[in-house]
Image (cartoon, rainbow, N blue to C red):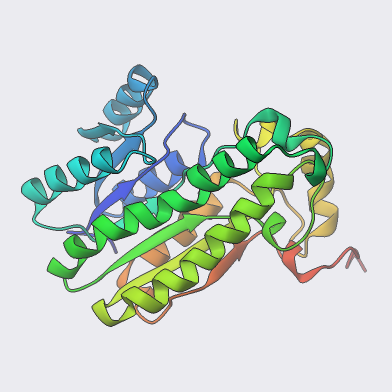
Length: 260
């Protein structure tokens, strides 16, 4: 088990079909002590997930509220005297921001997407870093999407927020590298999750994804979780500031089929 004795916080757990759930499960399977944080109002759902996975440390935290983040990490530090890994799986945009074009975006909706989907990574990293230093280093991971650099239908403000997130990853990697803290992002292809289904036209995108990939099959949350395990492990000791594409090769820009 390559994560034995490591303590990992996985944020943004929503349900059993979410990427965060798959990451938490594989972390647990690989020997890590896993902590979950979730949005207020999801307590019953996350407690059920915790019971299923054998996870007892659950925190209802609004990551846009700095005092709640501080309180969570203080409690984690008291229990475990540090932390090894933090997974940022937090993203939100109003439904109106995910339809039409970018000019349909409102100032309020645009800023909200930035605050929740990007700035919260800075807040988590700020208070996780001192705990990681106690462990001699650590790994911070964020979930992004290729809509950050390639315009995608009905992604709009969220695409811009993901671009901000990826830039934050690089700046954090630069800042925290001397403390042996690695910061990376994972960019999955389309996955049939609750969050993805909130994007207009997602079903058609999902159905057509395989044709645009080098590896001809749909992606699963478990595929993404495997990369998260690698980034949390000592196997990725010299990997930082990266966007790790887990999209079957879609990011290569190919649209051909390689059938002979």
